[in-house]
Length: 258
Image 1: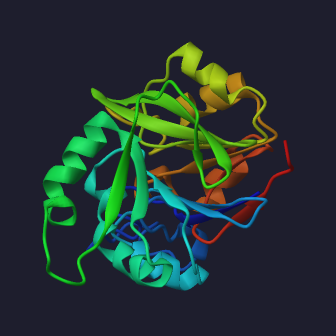
Image 2: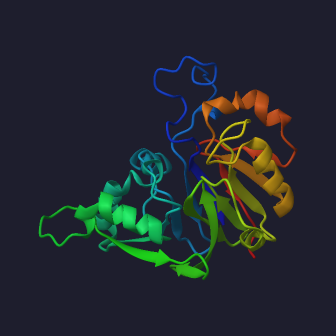
């Protein structure tokens, strides 16, 4: 399988509009972060998207993505679902509704905020989607690929991470119960959010993310959903353990088969 980091930034992205800090003014491509999203290319040629933020159109064009089997949604905050209207292009090409997978809280929010997708209508050209509500307790399949949901908390909002083969992906979390963390046992690649170095009320900070990484013990780990407060990539990345890195947009990582 191959994971492509489509975006690796927090809700405002990096650079932040009008910010004059060293990170936002950096010319290093490693310091440029669109809103967080990832693409999994399965060993059978399928494409599974994780989150569909407001930079979705730009990300699909950049990576020349021609098809999507489905979209895994971690939660319904706008930086993770703000690109839903642009599934129309895939509706046209694939001649079917897009399959969305999420928990109950996200389903309610999506059906409210994007009601025009799900209301009865005869107006041509609107996006088309089917929501599959997940409990977080049972594995499911997207195409012919098994996905294991992982329950976590984003302050007081239940969110989902996902395990696909040897890849584990957790974002926008600040708490994971031990029994959910056990679902990541044996992953080769772990992606986890780390907003900044200091503690935050709804996201893992860098020390907390490193603690999770140590417990899971993957071969490699990548930090995503980073803010400009994390610091310059060139400085922070070399301070990390050898197998841990800050993710950046466009980075591609391959994992072995199960």
